[in-house]
Structures are given as structure tokens and as C-alpha cells.
Image 1 (tube, rainbow, N blue to C red):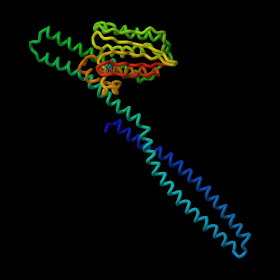
Image 2: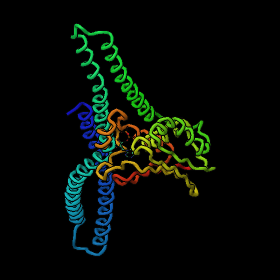
Image 3: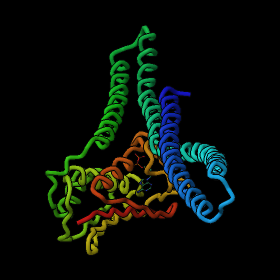
Image 4: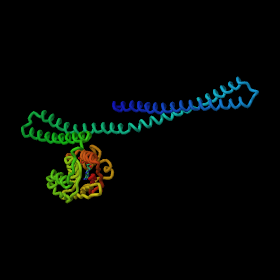
Length: 338
Ligand code: ADP
């Protein structure tokens, strides 16, 4: 078991004990008050009865009456104490079980975050290692080659540069993901025309689209969104980029905008490769890539784009949903508040 999970286990034990002590403090407090009130009530009741006997029965001595009072009160107290002990033992058992379940429930989000964090770290390490291993192998092979000429050495440098470019892309994405988890400053957010955001996002990808003769149709709209313009552009760069990347050459990507009373809805519709049903629930997970994307464009992504886009949408109190038919195309829908 890893160190964070051990810490989590001890936190669970401590939280269980804390919950249990709160439950038992309340139960014991209640029992003490109940005991005190019951004994006072019984004492008063018995005294009243004794008084009535004393008033009405002339053949019994006062000493006997006092004795009866004490015996009855003792019997009542023993009975009450036995019941309260049973009640407290029951509460201890039920309380321990409830406390444990409550502690597990309270710590579950933390546990999930820890698990996802460690999976993320190992995925990131794996993705970082792949280009490093490729570079290392190439350099080692070249160094062993005594007759390596300048042309061959240049080819190795070129290939190494490609791997370094991949590392740069990956580390930049990792950095952006890390920044998303930091506290967001919303004080400078303003309203922007969504058409300008979409234009700015498209501008960054226009070359890629025209290189494969893909047409991206942008809508004419006066709708306005509130948020961080750079992040919103980044969100649409990811979605447009994917729509282009997973489209067939000469395909069309249609972007539509409509407004509801409080929201702006942007649909990005492509008629590309589509996403299989088995992959659909996972595509927003970090490092997740559908099998066909790994084989089709292994160099073109790390499976981080959608999780970044989703994080940006969430920060803006929005969301991204997807509908897709494998082999026919996908529609990503971004909903943002006005
Ligand atoms: P990347 O595109 O870098 O692999 P993303 O996080 O952007 O990573 O997307 C995750 C996966 O979702 C992709 O690998 C791909 O399989 C699938 N995907 C995303 N957008 C589309 C799309 N428009 N059409 C088909 N598949 C898509």
C-alpha cells in the first residue's frame, strides 16, 4: 500500500473515532440527563405516595415507610441503570458502524482524487519516457557507429528535434492542466462576442484545415459570453482541432450557436471518424485516446485536450457533452452561461 493510502487509512480511523466520540458524548449526555430527571421524578412520586400512605394508614410506622421508599427507589435506579447501560452499549455498536461508514463516505472524494492523481502521474511519466527512450536509443546507436557521417548525424538530430517538440507539447499541456487546478481569479472576466472567440480559435487552425481541404463553417451571431477570453479560445481550439484532426480530407465542420434564456449553446459538428460507444464515456479522461486515434495519429495528441477543455468549461460554469456515431461523425456541444 502506498504512503498516501496509508495516511488515508489512518485518517479514516481517526475520523471514525471522532464521529464515534461525538455520538457517544451526545448519547452519554442524554443518558445522564434522562437518569437525573427519571430519578428525581421517581423520588418525588414515591415521596408523594408515602405521604398519602402516611396520611391514610395509621398502622404503619414511619421507619417502615422510609424503608419502602428507599428500596423502591433503589430498585427503580438499578432497573434504569441496566436499561441505560444496554442502550449505551447498543449505541456504541451502532455508532461505531455508522461512524465508520460516515468516515468512509467523507473521505471517498479524497481517495478518488488520490487514485486519479497517482494514475495521472504514472501516465504522464509513461508519456514522457517514450520520446526520451526513442532519443536515447538513437543517440546510443549513432555513437556506436564509428563511421557516422555528417548526413547521418543530421538525420539523428532532426529526429531528436521531433521528439523534443513532442516533449514540449506534452509538458505545455501538463502545465496548462496543473494551472487549471489552481484557484481561478474571476475578477477580470468580461463579456465577449462568441463570434470573436470562435474566429480567434479558428485562426489558429486555419492552416491545418486548408492543408487537408477541410471547410469550417462559423456562424454569424451576436451572442455574448462572460469569461476569460484566452481560456475560451483555448477550449474552442481544442474542439475545432479535434473536429479537423478526426475528419476525413475535404470534410466539413459545421459550428452552430443558439441561445436560451440564460445560456449559449455551441455545437461543433463533424462528419469524421466518429467515436465508438465503448470509448465515448472515457474520452474526457486524462490521457485517454480511442484505439483508432492511437493508430491513426499517434503523433498528434496525448489525450489531454478534452480534459483541459472540460476543465475550462467547468470553471466557466459550463459543460461539454458529446454525441457520436462511429464511422459517421461527432457533435460536441458546449454550454456556457451568458
Ligand atoms: P487527443 O485528440 O490528443 O487524442 P483529446 O483529449 O482531445 O486527445 O481526445 C481524446 C480522444 O477522443 C481522442 O483520442 C479521440 O479518440 C476522441 N475524439 C475527440 N474528439 C473527436 C472527434 N471530433 N471525432 C472523433 N474522435 C474524437
